[in-house]
Image (cartoon, rainbow, N blue to C red; front, top):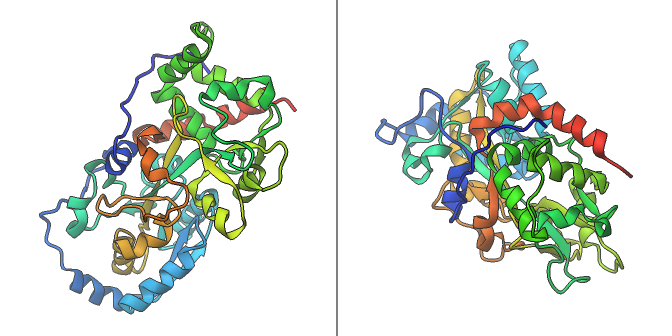
Amino acid sequence: MTKTKRTKTGRPITAACALALAVTAGFAGSVHAEEAFNLDALIEAARKEPPITVYAVTGKIVDTAQAFADKYGVKASGKKVNEAAQIELMIREYQADNIVGDVSVATDVASAMGELIPQGIVTSWTPPDLTGDIGEKLRDPLVVVSDPHVWTYNTEKYDKCPVTNIWQLAEPQWKGKLAMLDLFDKPLYADWFNQIETHHDAEVAKAYEALYGKPLDISTQTATAAWVKAFAENAPLLSDSSTVAEAAGAPGQADPFFVITSTAKYRDNESKGLKLGLCSGVQPFTGFLYPGFGLIAAKTKSPNAAKLFVRYLMTEEGIAPQTADGKISGNSKIGLPADEPSGIAKHLDELMAFDATTAAEDLDKRESWQDFWRVNYKK
């Protein structure tokens, strides 16, 4: 990647602050708390509209939609659809004037900011009665939930995390023993590289110097590009989330993988007997927070039902199935449950937060980062 001047952003201190760094407002039409809002009127209007379908990246959306329908008497169904497919469906349905997905949750952020919103395919709506509980920078587009992705090790094999600095992952002992989501199937990881380079390049260079006691040579490339190149040369296993989690956490391994994965997979410690442990204190970051927008199809025939569902997700009841997995609600009044398995609540200040103001640039550079990875990947 070409070397350019970089900026350095501060790090979050609390869950609310962490999320506030994730998105910056920039679209006209933001909802203000003083606007008149009548929840009962919205419910009544929603009940008169056709049923809605909600796309989300989690299968839990099926039960969430049913709970919503039972609560409000508004027909709704949830459908698990990955980020890339959501984008494709929303575009095709808009062009065909045949809307199936009325609401999209946790969409591909870069594509949402670079395509869906600018082209008027979707809109963002923030519940006026909850505005005061939602950080100003999380309201437009509305961040419903953020997904922490964290460095993870096998607690059966190691007494403590074996890594304290991301540059260690470029060393020979980790070759062939790393894993992460496939950045060609899950481009958020390519976007993550661009976010690091755009906002945290100086921190990556500082981490190198802290580990090796000498400055990194960045005369020909950025610190981020140097790290991604070295990381790729160690041939991380690229796979889906379940395979990545099991590569790290399956019990009985003599030489388990070291991975980066969503905190949602830590529930498998109980359900599948995995031994996943969160690596805290890793320089320059323990992981990252990936924001998930709640977007409404611009041509939906059920705008009130769609708004009501978005509002439901901003309540403790509506988002509880996801906060149970360590995902952070965009509503600052909603915390994580005490029994959340990863323990991420204590380490939010160590996570790199996505800045959606540059997400369109992430989309523009996505293929370049994927090509850069492909060229440097060595089995």
